[in-house]
Length: 109
Image (tube, rainbow, N blue to C red; front, side):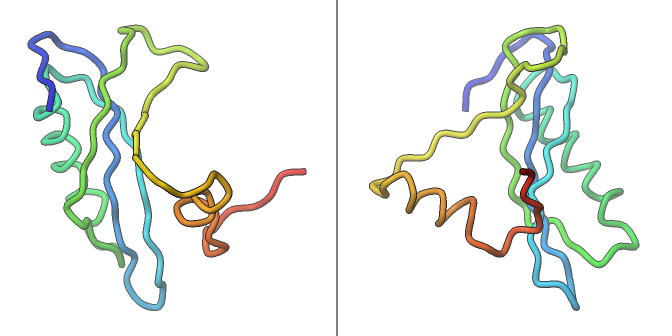
């Protein structure tokens, strides 16, 4: 993990599982002003306690952080990126990780 000593904006993705009657996982990205990756993740994980309090879902202990390059938040800026090596062809990759048919999303025409 790369650490920085100056304060910046960090996007942190945390993963949750919804309890019965759902069989659903949630990936949630939050934005934090912090001095390091570790600090941003700690802040996000503290907030997960509030997020799951009195709810039917649990935090699974996975947090991934991304440091925003720019200090000013504006439309269209990249707030999260994750690289994954894979031998899958593009269509297979999308089906395996992003379009399994079980996502709760609507198609916009």
